[in-house]
Image 1 (tube, rainbow, N blue to C red):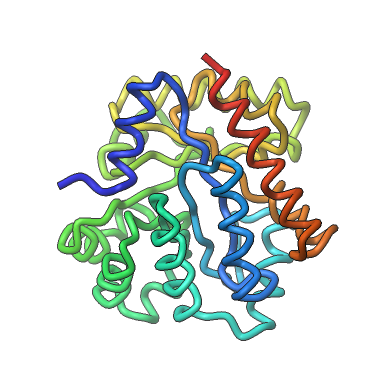
Image 2 (image 1 turned 60 degrees about the horizontal axis):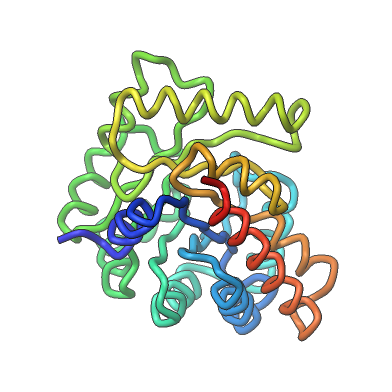
Length: 267
């Protein structure tokens, strides 16, 4: 049976548009406020939620997400808050996944982790630092609980390796790039597009791009060639600058609405 995430991509494909995915670390800035932020994202038009498991050594995260994760960790956020937020997000009516580095999953127990994601109604787990060669245990436990395994593919992934990684992904393939961090926006966008094009030659699984997209124009651009657009830092920045009170939440909803409009008008 397909997960809620797979059903969403089927639906948006029929609507000829990309999926808008919002990212937030659990417990940022507090657990109660993280629930309100996710609600504001969804009210603004975000289609799916990716919940970050705050981790002390987030090798793939930019400074904005790192700072948010450190704040959550300082608040004592751990695995219980991750699953609590996942359950809340699912109850708000959108497909939801967890993003976690492998160490916390291994520490908790892979079987227990997969079961907890499934019990909360989650669709799957993004594992940014887990290689397919080290995935036997996770593959078995995730399959057992019928949840999606989402791996990250980078522009540096070789043509030979690409089909091996993409064939192990379900739900979507996470295409990583770094717009706004490396080079100019248009140049990095080209590398993201070429990565999506390369993935498409090896797999029919939807491809979502995590790029540092922060406005409607960029969302429109990425949504013109990708099946999904992942936005995290732009939402987190709003909270860091404006707090999670009425004003901050209003701005979150506003950004979500603009991004949603961008994604829907891309094709």
